[in-house]
Image 1 (cartoon, rainbow, N blue to C red):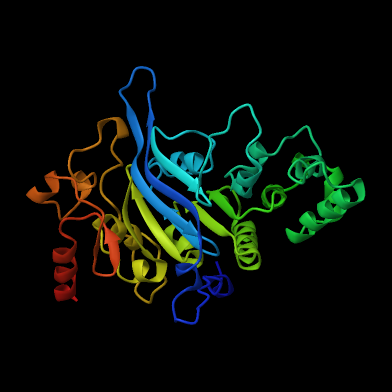
Image 2: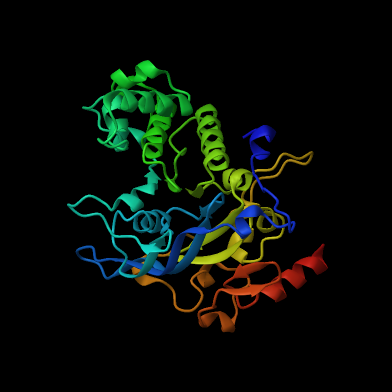
Length: 343
């Protein structure tokens, strides 16, 4: 990502000197959500274990963590593609109804999702125009529908003639732009983007991310941006939540979290980001692997991999305010003090 893209880590400042999204209406509210799976031959796999998370209008929230931490399971529940085992997801104050055979309520079509694989999320047997018009509605006259189609393609930087072609005729980056255009057809107030640039090359990644951020600014919509790439999230998110084994273990304004991470897991993720410096060094390596969610460790879930684990960590830490962050770590203050002494 370039410095120009980094500048899009927008923080619109209001009259009180606070970011505008601090006082903006909450679009998405995830409250104590659990997601359990029961695969054959295994015990209950708890992919999400009691998550609370909000996204406001005009705010970009990054959700990061290693593969297998539950990010995509949370995204599907947040978008209403599947039902939580318990807990509530609200969009604009109303509970999100999981998708069924009936059409989703019109108000909730303003909650949209962009998937990692645009080739899989677009129908290869239908033209681009037909798929985009699905979100426009049938009440508009034909001329207005065609005008709306052209506007959607133009907004994502695609030519009008793309409407007559099929998804396989485009590159990966172009297909992701078309997937974004399809989401925009419903005039969304919030978009959940689940690893939307992972399958793209660096140039296409920058284009898609810049497009999403420009839409956040222009439309004042919320964006939940899910990624395993903390460096990318650092460039674009106003606030970042770090997820580990189904739980949020730290959340803070992104710049603060990157400058002074508190939880040992967040510290490890930040330390693993490659750095350009006069003295070359390899990124830090986090020991061990993410445990099997069906046999999650007791107490602090990060305990088996944590260099600071102690007896107190045998009990589960609450997510609490301390220092400049919300963190689930019994020893957060001790670790921060010890780090300052070493510097």
